[in-house]
Image (cartoon, rainbow, N blue to C red):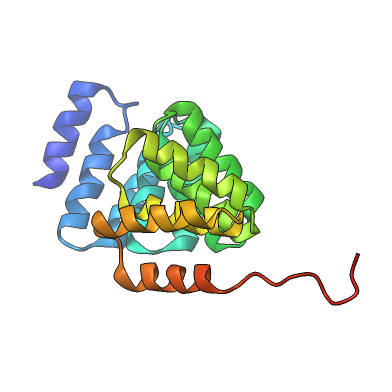
Length: 209
């Protein structure tokens, strides 16, 4: 039955359109036949070798399933074909972060922002990369970009507090924590950050000039 519907849609759209096979992949996912779904996404990519939709869909769905080894090559192929999709760039950036490839992750997030300058997930990705590098100033820029568009996003205030604290701007960091708390940020994370702000800064060693 499914195959008949796919054939009918394929005749309607044209044999070179991968959409019917992407839809068939969705149908296989619905009944939890994930490998067959992935086969359909891959076939969609093979039958339309310049169209990013097949590998994009396979990569995004595999990422959703937690199958990193399946997701990354498909997303990279979609990007090679020229997909204009900030969520897909974000997914690729996240895979690269988990692989420890921070430079590649940053490139992916910035490519996503080139598509959609308001893509909060890509700004959050840049903040994560900056934090992993210990770059508090870079993280602060990313968190501020998020809050400019989503001023009630509690995790960004929590991240902003972390960055401000590392930059020595402790009064501003404490104010950001108050806002994060009012907006419902995770209480344990707030408590941990408050404790870190209460640690006195070390002065220079005795005899230092």
